[in-house]
Amino acid sequence: MSVQSAAIQVLKEAGKPLHANEIAKLIIEAGLWKSDGKTPEATVSARLYSDIKSNGDKSCFVKVGPQTFALRDSTEIEGDTASVLAPVEKPSKPHPINAGSSFIDCAQKVLEE
Picture 1 (tube, rainbow, N blue to C red):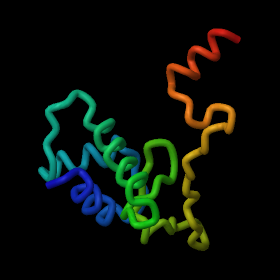
Picture 2 (tube, helix red, strand yellow; picture 1 turned 90 degrees about the vertical axis):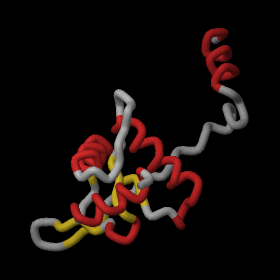
Picture 3 (cartoon, rainbow, N blue to C red; picture 1 turned 135 degrees about the vertical axis):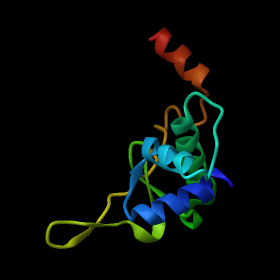
Picture 4 (cartoon, rainbow, N blue to C red; picture 1 turned 90 degrees about the horizontal axis):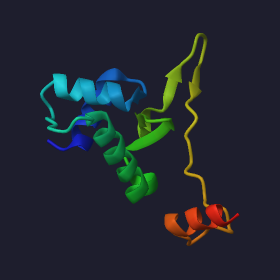
C-alpha cells in the first residue's frame, strides 16, 4: 500500500489533522506500510507534501501546519462551541529577486554580500 493510501486511511480514522510523526507511527503500527528508513516521518511528510504540490486542489491532503496534514474534505476542526476551519498553509512564493535562482546562486549571492 502506498504512503498516500495508508495516510488517507489513518487520517479518516483520526478525523483530525495529524503531524507526520503520528501518521507514520499509526500506519506502521496498523501494518499498512513498512519503512526500512531511519526517518519514516520524513518520508511520510515528503510524500504528502509532494502529493499536494503535484495535484494542487485535487490532492486529498492539505497542509495545516508544519509537517501537519489533514484530508481536504475534513479540514473542519471541532472547537469548544463551534467548528472552525483549520488554517491551510500556502507555499510561499520566492522573492522576485530570487525567482529562478538555484540554491547555489542564492548561497553565492549571500556570501558575496
